[in-house]
Structures are given as structure tokens and as C-alpha cells.
Length: 167
Image (cartoon, rainbow, N blue to C red; front, side):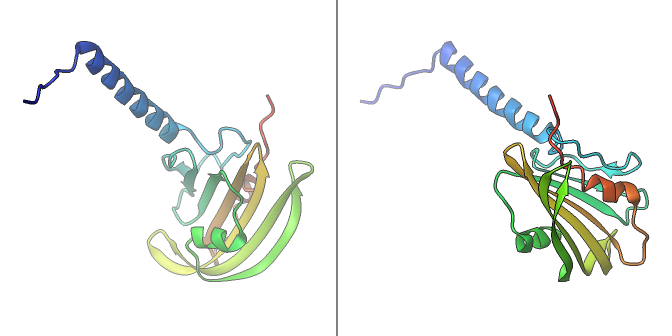
């Protein structure tokens, strides 16, 4: 004979509390921004997307043709993986160099060309990217625009602002 043991109200309360804690943690992670611990500042007129689990965020220019992408990664990323993340077809690295940002913080600058999707249309474009590690994480900031458009100075400045916030 099998005896069924009913859960006590206390067990129900613990299960509910655990479920609510997990839900709250997931919600807070989704609401946090990958830029919360760095000085990254996209242009004010650009439209942000929702943060992707606190690890990535995208901003689009007012005409929706240019894109900024910020990613916070717990591990270093190599250049090939970064280009794949950018979804650039036929990517050709035009320039890659070690640079310093935020005073003396080491970073990698990469400029590539290729075909990308800009506002629903595949067209030739240029991608500028900075990768740097600070505060125990690796950050990748990418600025992509159609080849025929003039670069946005604020967007170019934003990708170089991967500096750790001072307390």
C-alpha cells in the first residue's frame, strides 16, 4: 500500500518563495545593462533595444541604418568570433591593431568591410570594433553602417568608451 503524503503549507510557501526568487533574479538580469559597470555612452538620439540578459544590447540610429552593439562577455573573444557575432558576410579585415583606450587600457581595434543587413536590406557596409577587458569581463563594442553613409562621430566615440566606472 502506498501512502500519499500531502505537502504542508510551509512546503508550499518555500516552493513559492523559491520560484519567485528565481523569477526575480531572471528579471533583474534581463533588465541590467551590459554597460552598467563601464562608461559606454551611445548617442542620445539612438534607439536602444532591451538588454539581452545583461550581456548585450543594440542601439539603432534615428534612420535605422546604423547600429551599435555592446557585448559583455565573461571570457575573452577572438577576432574571428567577433566578426561572426556581427553577422557580416564576406568580411574582409581592413585594419587590426593594438590600441590604448581610457588612458592606458589595452584594446584591439578592428575595421572590416563586408555585406550586412541594414534596416532589412543587404548592402555593403563598414564595421568598426573595439574589444577590451576591464573589471573581470571582456567587452566588445561594434559600430556598423552602410558603406555610403558618413560615420557618426558620437557612435565612433562610444565604441572607445569601454572604461571601467570609478566608484
